[in-house]
Image 1 (cartoon, rainbow, N blue to C red):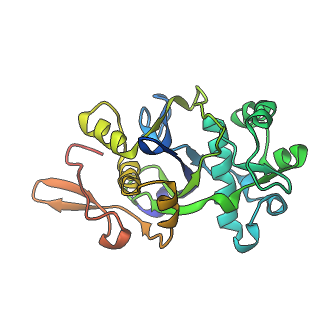
Image 2: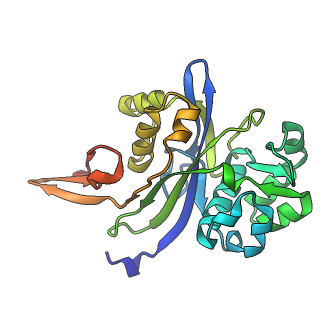
Length: 261
Protein backbone atom coordinates (compact mmCIF):
# COMPACT_ATOMS: atom_id res chain seq x y z
CA UNK A 1 0.00 0.00 0.00
CA UNK A 2 1.42 3.39 -0.96
CA UNK A 3 1.98 6.11 1.59
CA UNK A 4 -0.65 8.26 -0.12
CA UNK A 5 -3.32 5.63 0.58
CA UNK A 6 -2.64 5.64 4.31
CA UNK A 7 -1.37 9.02 5.51
CA UNK A 8 0.70 9.20 8.66
CA UNK A 9 -1.23 10.32 11.73
CA UNK A 10 0.90 12.24 14.29
CA UNK A 11 0.79 10.56 17.71
CA UNK A 12 2.65 10.52 21.00
CA UNK A 13 2.93 8.25 24.00
CA UNK A 14 4.49 8.60 27.45
CA UNK A 15 6.51 6.19 29.55
CA UNK A 16 5.71 7.41 33.07
CA UNK A 17 8.25 5.77 35.37
CA UNK A 18 8.96 5.58 39.10
CA UNK A 19 11.43 3.88 41.44
CA UNK A 20 10.25 1.26 43.94
CA UNK A 21 11.98 -1.18 46.27
CA UNK A 22 11.45 -3.84 43.61
CA UNK A 23 13.00 -1.67 40.89
CA UNK A 24 11.83 0.65 38.14
CA UNK A 25 8.12 0.52 37.28
CA UNK A 26 6.23 2.02 34.33
CA UNK A 27 2.56 2.96 34.18
CA UNK A 28 0.61 1.10 31.48
CA UNK A 29 -3.03 0.81 30.46
CA UNK A 30 -5.10 -1.88 28.76
CA UNK A 31 -6.81 -0.66 25.62
CA UNK A 32 -10.57 -1.14 25.31
CA UNK A 33 -11.50 -4.13 23.12
CA UNK A 34 -13.65 -1.89 20.89
CA UNK A 35 -10.78 0.50 20.08
CA UNK A 36 -9.74 0.07 16.45
CA UNK A 37 -5.99 0.07 17.14
CA UNK A 38 -4.23 -2.31 19.55
CA UNK A 39 -7.53 -3.35 21.13
CA UNK A 40 -7.02 -5.26 24.38
CA UNK A 41 -3.28 -4.60 24.40
CA UNK A 42 -1.13 -3.37 27.26
CA UNK A 43 0.24 0.00 26.12
CA UNK A 44 1.75 3.24 27.35
CA UNK A 45 -0.77 6.12 27.64
CA UNK A 46 -0.93 8.05 24.41
CA UNK A 47 -2.82 8.83 21.24
CA UNK A 48 -3.25 11.17 18.31
CA UNK A 49 -2.00 14.74 18.32
CA UNK A 50 -5.00 17.06 17.92
CA UNK A 51 -5.04 20.22 15.80
CA UNK A 52 -5.33 22.50 18.91
CA UNK A 53 -2.08 20.98 20.23
CA UNK A 54 -0.31 22.90 17.44
CA UNK A 55 -1.61 26.30 18.66
CA UNK A 56 1.49 28.48 18.94
CA UNK A 57 -0.11 30.41 21.80
CA UNK A 58 0.62 27.35 23.94
CA UNK A 59 4.32 28.19 23.87
CA UNK A 60 3.75 30.82 26.59
CA UNK A 61 2.26 28.08 28.81
CA UNK A 62 5.01 25.48 28.43
CA UNK A 63 8.16 25.27 30.53
CA UNK A 64 11.36 25.12 28.51
CA UNK A 65 9.62 25.51 25.15
CA UNK A 66 12.08 28.01 23.67
CA UNK A 67 14.35 25.29 22.26
CA UNK A 68 11.50 23.33 20.63
CA UNK A 69 10.16 23.83 17.12
CA UNK A 70 6.40 23.95 16.50
CA UNK A 71 6.05 20.24 15.69
CA UNK A 72 8.12 19.01 18.64
CA UNK A 73 6.19 21.26 20.99
CA UNK A 74 2.86 19.95 19.66
CA UNK A 75 3.97 16.33 20.13
CA UNK A 76 4.96 17.05 23.73
CA UNK A 77 1.79 18.99 24.53
CA UNK A 78 -0.28 16.21 22.97
CA UNK A 79 1.52 13.56 25.01
CA UNK A 80 0.81 15.48 28.22
CA UNK A 81 -2.86 15.82 27.25
CA UNK A 82 -3.14 12.13 26.43
CA UNK A 83 -1.51 11.11 29.72
CA UNK A 84 -4.00 13.29 31.60
CA UNK A 85 -6.97 11.94 29.65
CA UNK A 86 -6.02 8.29 29.90
CA UNK A 87 -4.54 7.98 33.38
CA UNK A 88 -5.21 11.22 35.28
CA UNK A 89 -1.53 12.06 35.72
CA UNK A 90 -0.93 15.72 34.91
CA UNK A 91 2.56 16.77 33.88
CA UNK A 92 2.04 20.43 34.68
CA UNK A 93 3.05 23.06 37.22
CA UNK A 94 1.40 26.12 38.65
CA UNK A 95 2.65 29.03 36.55
CA UNK A 96 6.09 29.97 37.89
CA UNK A 97 6.40 26.93 40.20
CA UNK A 98 9.17 24.34 40.11
CA UNK A 99 7.20 21.23 41.07
CA UNK A 100 4.33 19.36 39.48
CA UNK A 101 0.84 20.26 40.69
CA UNK A 102 -0.02 18.61 44.00
CA UNK A 103 -2.51 15.77 44.43
CA UNK A 104 -4.97 18.20 46.05
CA UNK A 105 -4.69 20.59 43.10
CA UNK A 106 -5.06 17.67 40.72
CA UNK A 107 -8.30 16.65 42.42
CA UNK A 108 -9.63 20.20 42.06
CA UNK A 109 -8.99 20.01 38.31
CA UNK A 110 -10.78 16.69 37.78
CA UNK A 111 -13.60 18.25 35.74
CA UNK A 112 -11.13 19.13 33.02
CA UNK A 113 -10.26 15.47 32.50
CA UNK A 114 -13.89 14.75 31.64
CA UNK A 115 -13.94 17.71 29.27
CA UNK A 116 -10.86 16.42 27.46
CA UNK A 117 -12.30 12.94 27.16
CA UNK A 118 -15.46 14.48 25.69
CA UNK A 119 -13.36 16.63 23.29
CA UNK A 120 -14.84 19.71 24.96
CA UNK A 121 -11.61 21.53 25.92
CA UNK A 122 -8.20 22.45 24.56
CA UNK A 123 -4.86 22.61 26.31
CA UNK A 124 -4.70 26.37 25.76
CA UNK A 125 -8.07 26.85 27.47
CA UNK A 126 -6.92 24.62 30.32
CA UNK A 127 -3.68 26.54 30.84
CA UNK A 128 -5.31 29.96 30.67
CA UNK A 129 -8.21 29.10 32.98
CA UNK A 130 -6.10 27.36 35.63
CA UNK A 131 -2.82 29.32 35.40
CA UNK A 132 -0.86 26.21 34.43
CA UNK A 133 2.47 25.60 32.73
CA UNK A 134 2.87 22.26 30.94
CA UNK A 135 6.13 20.52 31.81
CA UNK A 136 7.37 19.82 28.30
CA UNK A 137 10.91 20.26 29.64
CA UNK A 138 10.45 17.24 31.95
CA UNK A 139 9.89 14.91 29.00
CA UNK A 140 12.84 13.03 27.54
CA UNK A 141 12.68 11.87 23.93
CA UNK A 142 12.82 8.08 24.20
CA UNK A 143 11.91 6.70 20.76
CA UNK A 144 10.36 7.46 17.38
CA UNK A 145 8.43 4.81 15.43
CA UNK A 146 6.70 5.08 12.05
CA UNK A 147 4.14 2.48 10.98
CA UNK A 148 5.15 0.42 7.91
CA UNK A 149 3.78 1.44 4.50
CA UNK A 150 1.63 -1.67 4.02
CA UNK A 151 -0.57 -1.04 7.06
CA UNK A 152 -4.07 0.34 6.59
CA UNK A 153 -3.67 2.73 9.53
CA UNK A 154 -0.31 4.44 10.00
CA UNK A 155 1.12 6.54 12.83
CA UNK A 156 4.14 8.78 13.26
CA UNK A 157 4.65 8.20 16.98
CA UNK A 158 7.09 9.87 19.35
CA UNK A 159 7.73 8.19 22.71
CA UNK A 160 8.65 10.30 25.74
CA UNK A 161 9.89 9.28 29.17
CA UNK A 162 9.16 11.19 32.37
CA UNK A 163 9.56 10.68 36.11
CA UNK A 164 6.12 10.28 37.68
CA UNK A 165 4.85 13.09 39.93
CA UNK A 166 5.35 11.78 43.46
CA UNK A 167 1.72 11.98 44.62
CA UNK A 168 -0.25 11.36 41.41
CA UNK A 169 -1.83 7.92 41.64
CA UNK A 170 -2.70 7.13 38.01
CA UNK A 171 -6.03 5.58 37.02
CA UNK A 172 -7.39 4.46 33.63
CA UNK A 173 -10.30 6.42 32.16
CA UNK A 174 -12.70 3.48 31.74
CA UNK A 175 -13.42 4.27 28.09
CA UNK A 176 -10.32 4.10 25.87
CA UNK A 177 -8.53 2.11 28.57
CA UNK A 178 -10.23 -0.41 30.84
CA UNK A 179 -7.43 -1.34 33.24
CA UNK A 180 -4.12 0.06 34.40
CA UNK A 181 -1.06 -1.11 36.24
CA UNK A 182 2.32 0.00 37.55
CA UNK A 183 4.56 -2.80 36.35
CA UNK A 184 8.23 -3.68 36.16
CA UNK A 185 9.34 -3.97 32.51
CA UNK A 186 10.68 -7.49 33.14
CA UNK A 187 7.28 -8.55 34.51
CA UNK A 188 5.43 -7.11 31.50
CA UNK A 189 7.73 -9.06 29.19
CA UNK A 190 7.27 -12.25 31.22
CA UNK A 191 3.49 -11.84 31.09
CA UNK A 192 3.60 -11.37 27.32
CA UNK A 193 5.79 -14.46 26.95
CA UNK A 194 3.34 -16.45 29.09
CA UNK A 195 0.40 -15.22 27.01
CA UNK A 196 -1.36 -13.53 29.94
CA UNK A 197 -0.95 -10.06 28.39
CA UNK A 198 -1.01 -8.81 24.82
CA UNK A 199 1.83 -6.44 23.94
CA UNK A 200 2.27 -5.26 20.36
CA UNK A 201 5.70 -5.20 18.72
CA UNK A 202 6.66 -1.49 19.12
CA UNK A 203 5.55 -1.47 22.76
CA UNK A 204 7.47 -4.65 23.50
CA UNK A 205 10.64 -3.32 21.89
CA UNK A 206 10.51 -0.20 24.06
CA UNK A 207 9.74 -2.21 27.20
CA UNK A 208 12.80 -4.33 26.44
CA UNK A 209 14.91 -1.18 26.17
CA UNK A 210 13.46 0.17 29.43
CA UNK A 211 14.14 -3.17 31.15
CA UNK A 212 17.87 -2.54 30.69
CA UNK A 213 17.72 0.46 33.04
CA UNK A 214 18.38 0.05 36.75
CA UNK A 215 16.29 3.01 37.90
CA UNK A 216 14.66 6.24 36.75
CA UNK A 217 17.90 8.24 36.82
CA UNK A 218 19.54 5.61 34.63
CA UNK A 219 16.61 5.65 32.20
CA UNK A 220 16.67 9.45 31.94
CA UNK A 221 20.45 9.54 31.52
CA UNK A 222 20.26 7.11 28.61
CA UNK A 223 17.63 9.01 26.61
CA UNK A 224 18.88 10.66 23.44
CA UNK A 225 20.36 9.62 20.11
CA UNK A 226 16.90 8.51 18.97
CA UNK A 227 16.82 6.74 15.60
CA UNK A 228 13.55 6.74 13.66
CA UNK A 229 12.31 3.15 13.39
CA UNK A 230 10.21 2.02 10.42
CA UNK A 231 9.66 -1.75 10.54
CA UNK A 232 9.82 -3.77 7.35
CA UNK A 233 8.93 -7.30 6.28
CA UNK A 234 11.56 -9.91 5.46
CA UNK A 235 10.58 -13.04 3.55
CA UNK A 236 12.47 -16.20 4.51
CA UNK A 237 11.18 -19.19 2.58
CA UNK A 238 7.54 -19.60 3.49
CA UNK A 239 7.86 -17.45 6.59
CA UNK A 240 7.52 -13.67 6.96
CA UNK A 241 9.26 -11.69 9.66
CA UNK A 242 8.85 -8.14 10.94
CA UNK A 243 12.27 -6.52 11.21
CA UNK A 244 13.78 -3.15 12.12
CA UNK A 245 17.10 -1.60 11.15
CA UNK A 246 20.15 -2.73 13.10
CA UNK A 247 21.24 0.76 14.19
CA UNK A 248 18.01 1.55 16.09
CA UNK A 249 19.29 0.36 19.47
CA UNK A 250 16.92 -2.59 19.90
CA UNK A 251 19.28 -5.39 18.96
CA UNK A 252 18.18 -7.50 15.99
CA UNK A 253 14.54 -8.53 16.60
CA UNK A 254 12.80 -10.89 14.19
CA UNK A 255 9.04 -11.10 14.76
CA UNK A 256 7.33 -14.02 13.01
CA UNK A 257 4.20 -12.65 11.30
CA UNK A 258 3.65 -15.58 8.94
CA UNK A 259 0.14 -16.09 10.32
CA UNK A 260 -0.73 -12.40 10.43
CA UNK A 261 0.35 -9.31 12.36
